[in-house]
Length: 158
Length: 185
Image (tube, each protein chain N blue to C red):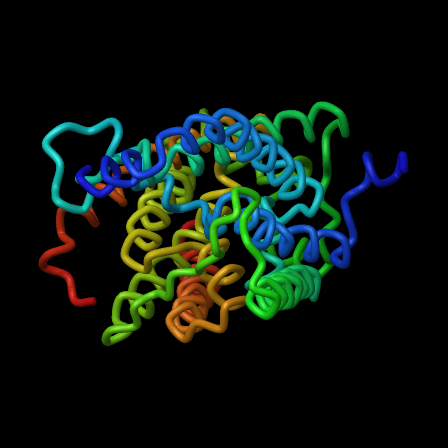
């Protein structure tokens, strides 16, 4: 709360002039991402099954090419020192490695859920849009899971 | 162009387009592409009596991401309505393996024997939707990211933590696919 207030006080005009248009841009990018998840079929339980059974290269080709394009873009952004449209320097905060337990254990728990639902968080929302409305329950359940993590966090190894 | 709208995209379109969301969000406003943070933002926004993990200004930190995810829902709706119903052309091997598990309806994006309201309180419906959803929410929060945040953004930034998480995703996915599903279905 205090950090946010400080930031706001530093640049109130900028915040006001940017907010509306920039927020709309995130919504429009989201629409395009929802279309992409649907047209690429990565939101399909069938495709996820195919991937975890190693019976098609399609999901691996999609993920690998996405990573290559994203990595090349990040390299270009860093290399050229590009800035955001509001001229801030672009920074990607590093994830803190620590003991790595949270990534190994949390990742495995997530993987179990990914294969059971056949969807990760983005696709869950895209599926609801696609008419698989029972996924509203999966989203509610995911919120409960995130909530439980928040509650147990001080006692879990990270 | 008509085929681009109605047919599924080939991998060499789908993958690079997904990858481009990383620079797009960085350039628009220094945002790291990742969807699962929304679960945290929604908890922070909605539920009273918060543990520390949910005590932050979700509007400042997460409004952009909540709008992004609202867009995802709308995008799914638009895609399904302009392109009509979509059947997923999975490999014959997968179809055979799933038939052995008792899946017969291959229309749509997810099997109707499992992912409908009427199947929700069957064992396979309950575990797939409710338990599966819970594990997705707990796991992403614990791991600090999901497929978008770790497998795409994190790997693209060459972060070791993301590589560990992605290996975890596959360990969990393989266990669920090869050991849990045969018990459930």
